Amino acid sequence: MKTTAKPMQYVKSARTPNPPSEGLLDRLFAWLDISLVRQAAGELARECHNAVWEATNEEVCGMSRDEARGYIRAFAPEVLFREVDPVLQRRRAGESLRQQILAEATEQLVELVVKDISRFKLRRSIGRAA
Image (cartoon, rainbow, N blue to C red; front, side, top):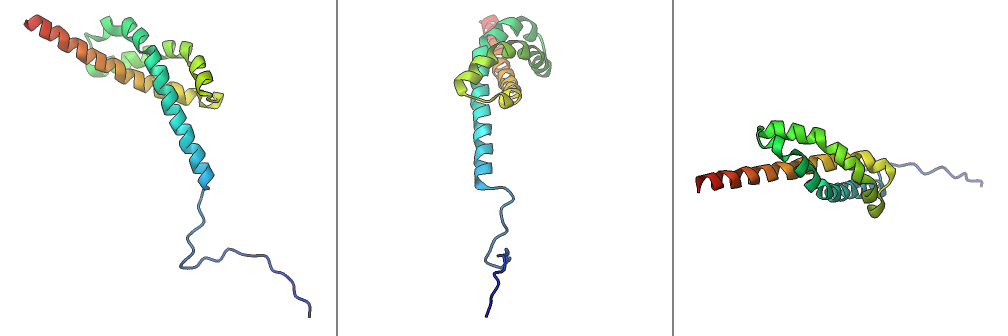
């Protein structure tokens, strides 16, 4: 008697979950990329923080919070572009992550400088009151 082998088929049962739409490794690599982007962006933002603060503080101190955010967001890329390559090399981040790192660094840098503005305005108002 001759038997022929049939190819195995995926049979859905009540105990068998749906096959994952993406594999565990895909999710892990995506998480690693996100983590690397956040870390590299944080490093880049901290490195550029003083330069952006010094270049923008006189202008932004007279602005509303939203205006200051927009002004800093427009100015920050000029400084970030100059410093991104060493960060990419130190972090061994691929060129494919450059734009994501720059975008995230811009947002982090805006937050850092806006916090500085708040502190500066508070110190200035306390100094006037004293």
